[in-house]
Length: 246
Image (cartoon, helix red, strand yellow):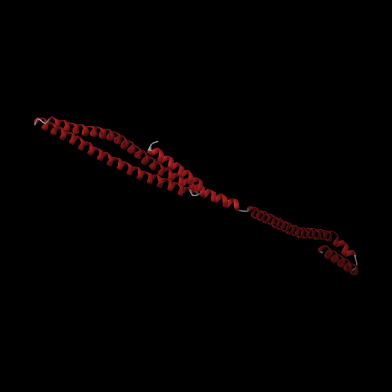
């Protein structure tokens, strides 16, 4: 399993544990990004160490090659001097350094592959961190919005509106009763006024009728009645007028 895969497995397990234990999504996301940043630092350190190791192997390869070349020259010098045994020993040393250089070259090739893989993982992790930061801001905004909605819903759910609505209904009923009483009183006042005016109008009709009767009958009746009887008639008429007025 590659280093990046191991890192992501650790990150996922950590995030899962935080989600299960913590209640603040914002803290969870912040911690997750912080963990990824810490892993990126470690990965960069690993890349730096791998590069440093590569440079050290390169120096060892170069040193082994230089030593092999030096022992070749010595072998040639010994052969020129007629010392074949010394030349053979020098060539043996040269062969050993060549073998060392070849082995180091193999390590150097492997180290180069490791460095390339670490650099690729580092770039992927940097991309994931950038993506995680963008998602973190979006998720935090959504979490805050959800939290605000939850608080509003809890507040509305905790309100007991039945008493308030009942008070409004009672007040409405009371106002309706007051309006009905006012309308009834107004109608009674209007009926009373109309009756008074009707009485006045009826009284006027009676007076007119009486005047007409007096005009049509008064002359002959008054001339035929004695003075004493005329006075009685006038009194009776006055009494009738008074009764009519009442």
